[in-house]
Length: 459
Ligand code: BES
Ligand code: MN
Ligand code: ZN
Image (cartoon, rainbow, N blue to C red):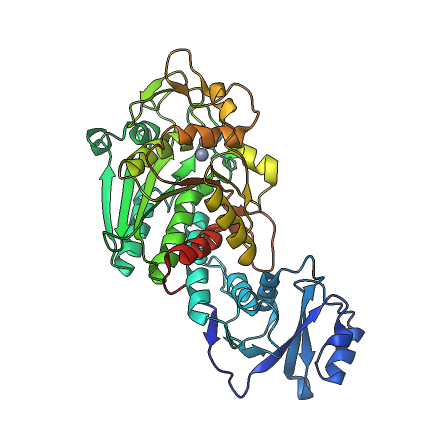
């Protein structure tokens, strides 16, 4: 990682002075540094950094703006990772939410270097007292895994490469991975995963990772692994297809989450299910109007081949449901409608479990990982009625696209004691101090916090 966290401060370490908006008067920096900040018009706006010069052109320190208290986001310390010269640094005074600030710094240091772009400056940063550096590293590591997987183009992150990445994660943590691929999907009764993925050059598959002691509470994560979504025969237009390498964002996020949970040794029996497919166009592609029989036995009329995510998830979730997990969580870049509702930065989640909803909302606040609950509005289920099958995969108009997709998935969950669905975007379209443009981890730090509080572990 470009930022190494130190538990104690090096002698040569340079100070970062944190400043609230218009807070230079209250800042404990040396007088001449404050004069320099004033002369440069530094006002403490969130995510601004000003380098302070020392003698003979050396660097003496830096200011970091934290902004106004209501808009304050401690993750904006990520700006430091972009602006500080290489070397040893520390906070002159720990900011209020010091651990989130250090996490922001780590997250802001990310860059995607696989295709030759230069990494950011390497920094060594002394974590303030009370900051759990190991936890910060686990959370950043899981987020980076999700970002890397999403950023990698479909040509290098097909269902086969996603399997390799999952295998690597499994072996790092002593987890087991079982893979069902190609025609075997039919043998194992996973017909919708096969139907969606069969037109692609790289065979569709279900990845099944297991970790943890057998008698611990069963927590199962399911992630949409559509490695590229052309829309199928209901082909997407160019603009809509451009970013569809990110349609495995749900898979990337549950893998990032699994990495956090396993590294923290949370005491659960973890299972991760990823239907990994490419929604491609070929003579053997599934068609609009086809009727698929799902693993669960429900027949599904295909109103639109571009609503493919819910089909592959449905079989994976039916499988997950069979062993009656205590908690079933699915994450998916499922609908454009979720973005229309809440924009790219606030993923909606759906659950009928009030206690879980409250715990998620609280954790989301605590770790500055935005989430917002939306309703599984049961009367809308009838919008998925089909004339010839048990259910259609789409409704006729665009109303409530994200809730209705959630309701569709709910038809395949029966025995799980609790279930939550996350309709994420998986992409950061505008640069932020802690998040460069590109693939993004969304909601998984909040989910990690909720699970750590529930089940305990190192976190
Ligand atoms: N992967 C898309 C959803 C998506 C699109 C997420 C753009 C984020 C950005 C999904 O498979 C899809 O195409 N959904 C359709 C559903 C529709 C056909 C009912 C959509 O949202 O348009
Ligand atoms: Mn689609
Ligand atoms: Zn999709």
